[in-house]
Length: 83
Image 1: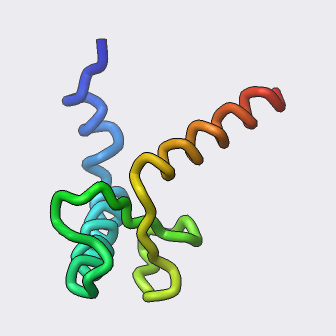
Image 2 (image 1 turned 45 degrees about the vertical axis):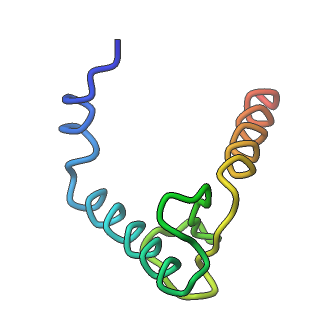
């Protein structure tokens, strides 16, 4: 069984992870303000360069949650198949 309390203490409460989460939330707010996403929609705001601290307009974009999850699963499958 997953222990969320210890997981938070070991990883999510670290200052760099708090900063990353804050930056991701900020990127989401910027996309909502720009009209590219709406509260409660099925859009994921992603950082195209993989850097959550980079909130430049060109570095952040939106994608459908379903499509983003499919891409993540495909990437995981490819890595597992290569090993």
